[in-house]
Length: 93
Image 1: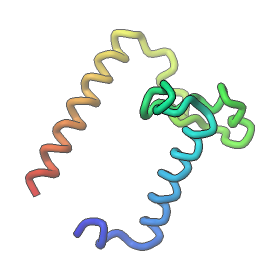
Image 2: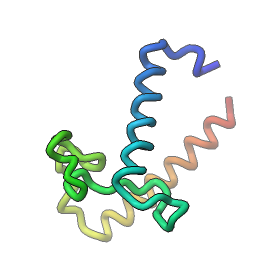
Image 3: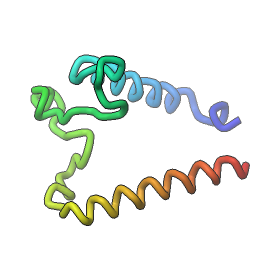
Image 4: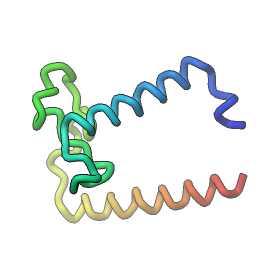
């Protein structure tokens, strides 16, 4: 029901963005079936793609580059818990 409520242009944006991520992960890193880490996308600066795309996938505005390891670990735990809460919320509907 939710997918049907999304306008066609929004669906095309979603599919195009996911397709870009799949394409980028194939050309930029090691495939997960060959020892790569699933969901890990290398920085655009590492692959030379920063000449085409001025922002990066993670922290495009450069706000979190100086984050301490402790704060980063806490942020990761918070993000995982938020994802779990979102999955439980989806089950409620």
